[in-house]
Amino acid sequence: MVDYIGVERIQALMARVGVARLLTGLAKEIEADFLRWSQFEKSARHAIHSNVGVIELMPTADGKLYSFKYVNGHPKNTAEGLLTVTAFGVLADVNTGYPLLLSEMTYATALRTAATSALAARTLARPSCRSMALIGNGAQSEFQAIAFHAMLGIRELRVHDTDPRATDKLMRNLRAQRLPGLHIVRCDSAAAAARGADIVTTVTADKRNAVILTPDSIEPGMHVNALGGDCPGKTELHADILRRADARVFVEFEPQARIEGEIQQVEPGLAVTELSAVLTGRARGRITAQDVTIFDSVGFALEDFATLRYLYRLNREQGGVRPRIDLVPELADPKDLFSGRQAMAQRARA
Image (cartoon, rainbow, N blue to C red; front, side, top):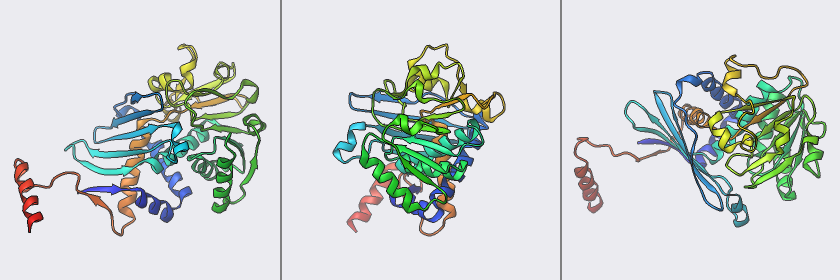
């Protein structure tokens, strides 16, 4: 039997542990895996594109555990009452090849994206940051806001979305969370939201080369989390932001970011630094208070690996009835798969 975390179970885990505490714990898990970056098998994710979206597989392994995530991105879905992004993942034992966990990863992806985003900002932004613009107020926005409030002490959140209903939803949900000291400011444009903010997080879903932020929106010392540019032909930043003389660009895994990130739209010679190099001390992050730091995040398999392992442990620690699924046959004789079928048929007839 394989451990199983479905939608109901992960909702229960978030309720028991608390979203802020879960995000903080997950960020520590992700950071720990970035610190042992060299131990992982790494590759750009495998993507199948259509004219309406993308379906991707994201695998990695550290020699002991293996994981993969199936994830889609279909911006048109919301018009049909469906989620833009859905996902599930598997954690497996490398020694036997047996799966240990089958998990939903729609909630989990929102959690790990927020945890990674806040971890990167804590590493690259100025320590004094207390205000953030959140541009794109869809399914992942609450998780981003809670992570930055918990991990960086953000106290002013400047929000904007082209769909006013998305902003209504975000403000309603955050107020229900009663996050201490958080002041939410609704803005009528992305430029207005970014104006005066210490950190700007963009997390939009439109599948095109959009210009969410223009060069005149970027101020010295700002940190930009560009999360929405995550497949070929989908970006959020004007290319000249990346070319600024005072800009320092950071990515998760450069070969993947060159294909799918914001840097897909600029010359290959643009210098970028992988986040793991900063976390391990092999490279510098922010050098001066006036630097513009940009985290060009597309999501990487290591983050899903850390998330699945964290959820596997957390699921077992929480006790109670732990859902399991008969994904792999349990046989008295591992060479006799056929008799297992016969035994099931006999039980069905009884």
